[in-house]
Image (tube, rainbow, N blue to C red; front, side):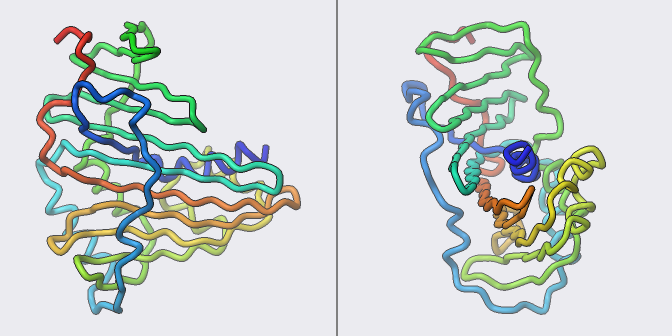
Length: 245
């Protein structure tokens, strides 16, 4: 249950991830270990409210669909440490690519013209399994930020950060569904911060979650980052050379 609980909490930030790469890039090179670059920038308090910042970001997201995103999710428990990295590309042609590196085990999914393919062992495998990615477009993701609690806005060297403190389970109620909330309520305590990052034009560029929780008497630490790049600049996703167009 401890692992399930932590994964549920981390899934709050499964806003996915990506890399355009090129056609010859093997899947094993996907999802390199990175940290959210925005955290390294100096921050100063801002007079802007969190509501105004998010409203501006939502306005600037209108009509944008494509992006690249990269996520790292690390969970540390007393006797185990696990890191999952994902790279996602959402193309302007309604194409989708998701590479998942689960502690070294890599699988890449493609959805092209409604068909789902998997890239395994340098081979493309057609699968009958469906893979839903509706709601993963950039505009929908940014619009979902309106559900987040108010926080403190800070000015960065090249943009803004919105910090939301979470010191109890109820702090997550604004942005996860009731079923997930009921699952994480088994934790004795949760304490953490959520940071949302925006550039100087108020485009949403990523997020970071740091949380310490106690579940069944054991301490669990979670660190998850998501970094969005190439916003509105991805026309088509890169595909293996042996995948038919």
